[in-house]
Length: 99
Image (cartoon, rainbow, N blue to C red):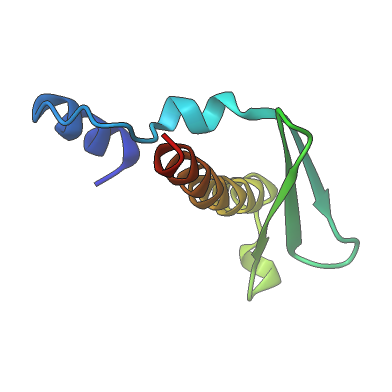
């Protein structure tokens, strides 16, 4: 189940307690930068968040013959974005525990 399907299921079931959403995760990202290390299939994605914090994601291809820069960027971006869920989840839980 992808993020959009999961989000629709949550909305359909009327689950409305404080939570993270894909849009919230996307909204905290203000800049995206990529680096492909010369002579490798190793791609790094650096996401800069609204507060200036940086999150890094990475991808590597086992066989250079299979390397595709667009796919490498996509995998690295998703790896970095997945880390934001954890950070934002902690932040939301901290806020809720202080209420």
